[in-house]
Length: 114
Image 1: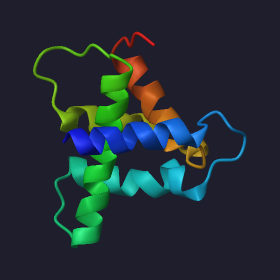
Image 2: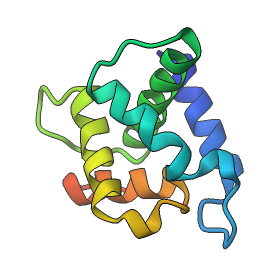
Image 3: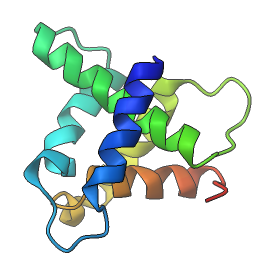
Image 4: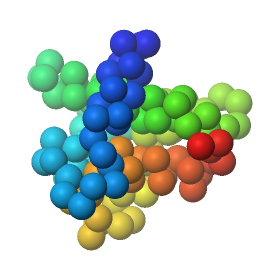
């Protein structure tokens, strides 16, 4: 689990989430289907399952790094569901950074300290 969080934090640190042009590998277009599959607990091929786990790791990493404070008992699945719902509510932003949108979603749902 720590390795997933570290990978997510490293990815966030190297992305420049506020940059005007976002790399295709960082967009909500790419990550949303895997996040939805994670929330819906869809089985899949190993590559899909790996990407589902990476999605959860990215969300968990942002949540951890930003010191978001959710009520006791909130699961990774619930955190990912918050992100999925937020992104789906603003489909015009699908080309934007998944990391930035996930951060916004978590911050809106629960206060974050950074």
